[in-house]
Image (cartoon, rainbow, N blue to C red; front, side, top):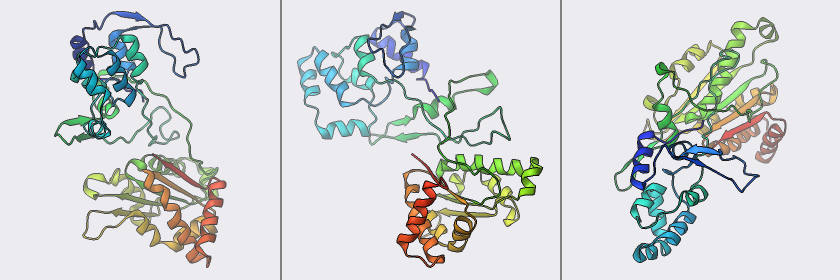
Length: 348
């Protein structure tokens, strides 16, 4: 998703800096091999709304630029002698390029310098949470609003989630987006089991997989004749009340163990005195893990934050326990699953 800066925020910045939003500038890019070519003609308003991440966190080189163009000696000295502690404090406070320009008003880089020293707004990547068979003309995303309060009590919002929150489907708002190829391998048939483990919004791709298999059950007679594999879902978060995403769907698909989602295991770490994590739930089901992944050659999917990378160790322990293997042999089996694209990780 290609997000934009808020129009009102851009207008206020341009007015403060002395830019006319409607002025058109012509860009001659000397980097012919630039990955994302800059538009040749663009208004000042478009440049700061759609291209430059002026409300993003600056790198060290932006401080260096300001020190070079600052006309006030005290400001120049402060910029040249920014300590690591101050730099880290600015990061914690989420100080932006615009904030620094206001903090050091004698530093007035040209539009050319801004284009060179302020990064472009990066597209945000989200996993698709829907089935292309079920809804070929629609894409569902699972996005948690990114907001926080800085150490000094300033409320901040993430660029893309805030941008999407402001879109109004009733007004035919449109956004710029691109669909990339998936990074995980899917079974070629629906008769093999799928064991899925998700943390937080890591449920997004797993929801797409489950809904696709449910659609197949309901609409593809040939696939039903070939048999439909079991599905087990492990989900971990802090609290059930606020963080069990798509809870009603999972309960419907599980249907007390009678539905297509044959196993539903949840771990909400902060809902009881002792913490329970997703790996604890996996370790409770060694026979299930062994049966689905070894006997039936099923697939395992780990999706979510980087913590899901460690789940392979617990899967290996389960396989080793039931298969009378050493833990090293269990780990080797998981490695072989990865080579065969049967153990897939999507993490960020």
